[in-house]
Every structure is written in structure tokens, then in C-alpha cells.
Image 1 (cartoon, one colour):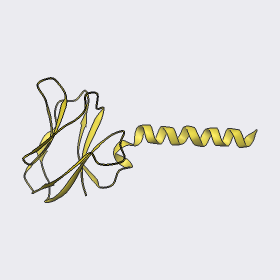
Image 2 (cartoon, rainbow, N blue to C red):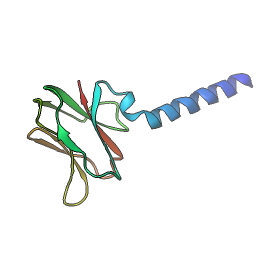
Image 3 (tube, rainbow, N blue to C red):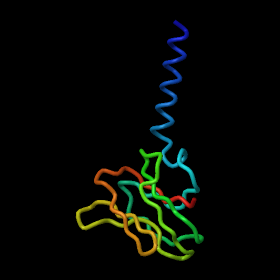
Image 4 (cartoon, rainbow, N blue to C red):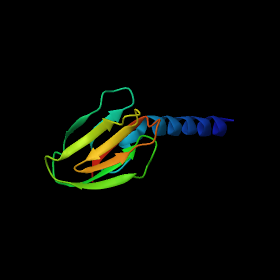
Length: 106
């Protein structure tokens, strides 16, 4: 019975870490984070490099962009309310219902 309890505890801990982890389990250094209920976060790239776009539920980048220091980097709202990720001159539409998105310097 203790094996079952240990397995169940390990499963619960793993599920909690995955559910809350988001930006912590993806590679790179988080530069910009956008939450669903927040105002759009827009800034500039802190350094030249390749930036990867992640969502909270994905382990793999959904887009990458080469950006120069000072280029626009962040998030905007589309006319229908969905999120648009911005990196320099590039724009990436995020699926409706995206809970969080992150730009990470690789």
C-alpha cells in the first residue's frame, strides 16, 4: 500500500509542477511574459539575439525571431481580442484562449 501512496504523491507533485511551471521548464531566459487578464506588455529587446515564443502549456517554441537590441518585443491585442506576439517587424497570432505566453532569449 505504501508503494501506491508514494506513486500517487509523485504523480500529484509532477502534475502540480507542470501546471504551474510554464516558463520555468522551457529553455532560455524569460524576457517578456503576457497573462490573459493583463494589459498588453510591450517593450524592447534587451539584447540582440534569437527569441523564442512559448505558451504556458507547451514545451516547444511556437515561433522564433531574430531581434536586435531595442527592437519592439512583447504582446498586443488583435481587433477580436486575441493575443499577438511581436518581435521586431514580425507578428505571431496566438490561439484564442492562450493563458500565458513568454518571449525567451535563447
